[in-house]
Image (cartoon, rainbow over all chains, first blue to last red):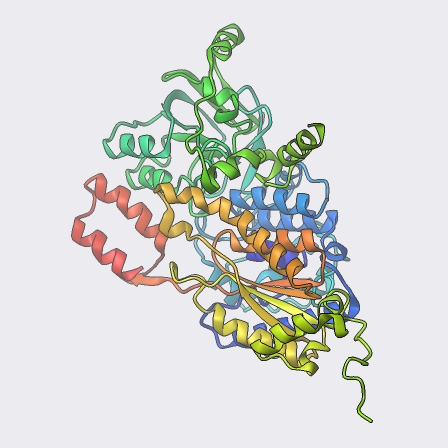
Length: 366
Length: 198
């Protein structure tokens, strides 16, 4: 997200990437303080800077660097807090037309530190501009436009972290959107670090991360399986846990290329493999992922953007009629408060969204 | 004849904070702020909040107090008055795989809420948010969107990888090594060495 914040203009360009222990970070912090006062003098506000085009730039930059699925959730949330329209489809539309040029972990070879040494985010902007994939006139907090930042990029000779836009690592982005009978409101699939586009296999169903992790530890998952982890969504968890321990355990067992995993929870940026997250609606709200039975065939097909269950609609209707919402995992405290307000992952999982609006409407109806 | 101490033109850039600091009615607030150490000159300038997400539960945010001092120097140099405050953060790397991981995304909302509340509560004219790991950067951006007062986010910088058998290793390497250990591919000693190196 540190890159995305520079690209949407809220962080001074080039300053986020300076490593924590680099003496230049202190100067960057001093400069940031000065910029803040300049912004106050000019009365240049965040909503003047973050526009729909700025969000598109950020989505492109995230795609070009094979950024994490969390970036989708956060950009959807940021858009809503700025009152800007942004639907999950934007990540498909822009992701599919943005080549991956960043050779970055977990799918690639280099870390954030290497990107900084190679020339930083300005290089990404320069290549996006070269591919006519950047809105050049969007402004950042330091007063420069994205076009100016791109043109002032300072590339270290021989660097291999950011490829030229015409010689990408992959022709399309590191993630895209799926829909279908298991995700009517959308889901995100990771495409970085592997070439898999299709997987069909038996569902191995777990109603919590712990249950899935225990099965993997006991060597209970085999090649071909589709690991389903549900009731881990924004409301169900609550809080959409990241399944890194599970996905890393699968990779550690050598199953990373042989299985798929789908969840209404989240993934860490460090997760890699053929993995689908943010399935909406979530299980706790009666989403179809709640209706999957052990052994059902689940299909992930990236080319048709589909996540589907190979079970007849009549059977699904029977299951839907029999489904009962489980009792909330927590009766009070911050968990319960959050679960009562949080919106779906396809709406950024914010607490100031549609469910709050509904609660407010209820309070005036009384 | 002494001049009325409250008879002082307000800086036009104090779009919000003038309501907190200017005029005789605000004497109680000024008394509180002077007890912190702020002077009349400080309070006549635009007031910029400096939010940190400093916490001792992870390495990722540890430099923020030092960076906050630098941000404050920059603010003073440019003619503003900084007021530092802390918000929360939750380490994904530490919480991962436990019930505590449910706190991670929730923390994003609390970070946004707390930056919003402190800034509204103290009539800041601007805001600088220092962020580090995980949900702190999006939380800060969301707060800026809600507040819409001039401001920015500065990420405190990536932490350095460790080195194990000549290769760079991070906490991601350790997560995957847990899977390798459980599959019998590495020994407990190798896992422990990696944990200490990453």
